[in-house]
Image (cartoon, rainbow, N blue to C red; front, side, top):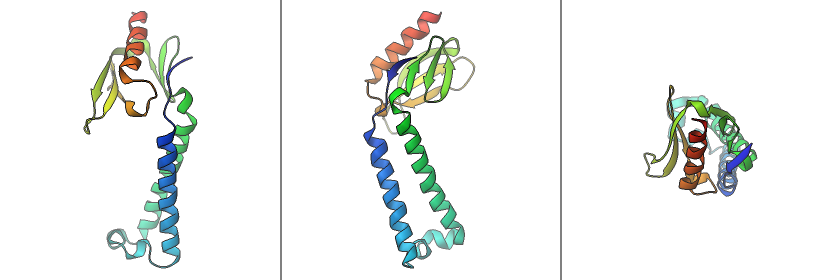
Length: 145
């Protein structure tokens, strides 16, 4: 496998620290009696706010640590497929590779496929520039045709 681009590590470390700190702060406030029970969401959801909130914190922590472990070889090329983390896209299924923008105006890499929805990859986490990554992937797609 040839690695096209890896992910930047600092955003995942920063967001992991933010979510761990948020979870610890709310847990401390809950133990002191002033946490989620005094908020507006408690009026809406009642005691269900606890598993919802802590489940979201645990999910975010697990997601960021999973991406942090995959950061070195996140976007790669195999002899006949493009690898996005754990997802494989066959090169014969790829119609085109484009550079677009998401709804916030941030750059993203769009892999247009023949039969399925296009895959969108947030390129602001990649270490290489988006245009370089797109050109490498386009060359690989054109080589298979």
